[in-house]
Image (cartoon, rainbow, N blue to C red; front, top):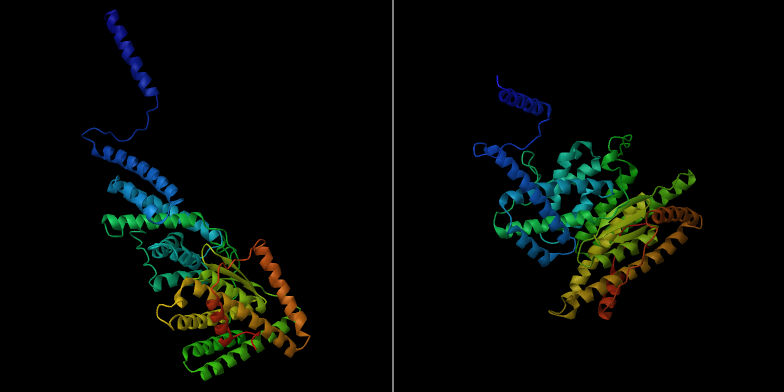
Length: 452
């Protein structure tokens, strides 16, 4: 064998040894013409990267734009993207929504709260939110793990037609489930981005129950006896209240509401005295009341006017039209019922006042805000007067009992809301103000220990 051949063979052996000893690099499948799956893999990776970047861009724009401005940006961006990229972006958006919903539940929000906050926004955001909540409940196991009150809220979303439950085999498809035309896709993405922005900006709320991370880690709550004396009384009061609101005959309404007042007054005071005699701690409950537009801020003033004389406190989350009510369980029930009844009466009286003359100024937003503001102030005055009368009729021994409850409620309210500020009413129309006070004087104070 010649020297040159030996050298060449030795060099080839060395190369083979080097290749065997060097770890092989993991690579994508071949992109040669004969290996189509490799090309698909790389295309999918590129689409995912493009979708991720596009979603980030749109989310940043949605954080500072809304309405037609955001829609214009979405229109421009969608026109430049392929169907595959948009499908990948939708998948990523669904994952982000699920994660943000999980964070919202840990931050004290519940399904009914989030749906209310979403429904007040543009377009189909409320419907979209309902579908997202049901989707996240399915993927997280909330239908089987959540407390009964939580499952009741989910069931209401599903049965009330707020949003269809996403199919398990398909999952939640908030955009691709819409019409495939350009306008439908633009509106769908605009609503979805608006919803993501809402989730990103949610404040932390006081938990009304254990968050999902603590489900199953606490002892089961005691079963409430729905036939208890208290529940029977509350059921009778609600029934009387419904009859009073349904009848068109003032005499019948007075009869129904007088009986409701008598029941609630007697039962509330008896319960407070019983706690005092047994030296029981004062139970304090937190409940969220959803205020419906329009004029949500002045409607919240009415809730506050009803709450304060009833030893309860209310605070308004203006960004989402939600009031938080703090009080003893019985007082909270009473305040919510009385507020609902008075708001119905105010709405009827305001509509009658606004339709006395076609095209009159009495239909303006300023008139109606003034009407509701004056109505709330006058109702508060009437309840304060009734408070003094009721306390006097039951004797001086009732004063320390009610003060003890008021102190417990105030302490819990200030713990939850150490910093609050008064709402300003702005310009008020004199005619609307007077009409509101007159309507409040005619209103029937339906339920509560503080009614005359």
